[in-house]
Length: 293
Image 1 (cartoon, rainbow, N blue to C red):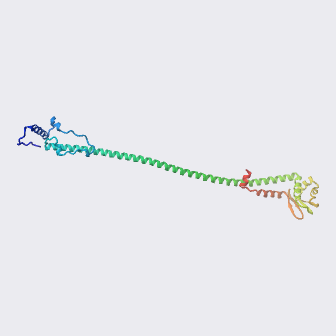
Image 2: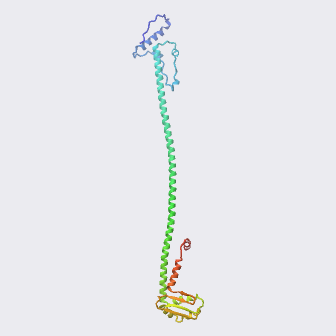
């Protein structure tokens, strides 16, 4: 601790007050007790300045500035004031450092949030664009798939329709022939006029000839005579020599005309074969279908 040395210097009376005041202050600082500082000493203690924004704003006090009042201060006072100044500067520096850390953290947080939001928005936009493109591509593929399926179905239906038509057409031909044959037989069995018309229709196509022989079934000949006993007179335009040759072993509907140059089968079987050939010549194609429609 600081001990006051006796002074041998002669001090003028005008400076006694300052010395007493200085000595009293030294005793207070050297005692180490929590003694209340007198008001006159408190007046000389500098009030703490407000905190500075940065270390650049802190004033630097030099020893020559400490003695602006002209008072001579002891080493204890100077050391105390220096420690106080360092402590205040350290506190201000720590506050500035803490504030800087907080500001840096806030800036980092703001930058992260801004980047996250921006990235999220861009990601959402990219995702919507990609999803839209994918949906459009899948829609086009679906349309193409259905178009292909429809085209294939149309071709298949056309082929099946044509096949069914040909199948049913063959059946219709068979039915038509069966009906025609049945009708002809019934007509021949019930009416001799039909037989007469068959013979006259075919003979009239011929040129005049020397003779004509008509081979006919016995049953049909009887039906013919019952209608017209002198049927040969109806054939005189073609030939003056007309002769019927009755066949006992032939079936009903048998009829053949013979001349010197040819022999023509006009019987029911021949007519049925002719009808069958004509029906077999019927074809089905797109042009026929359009005409039918």
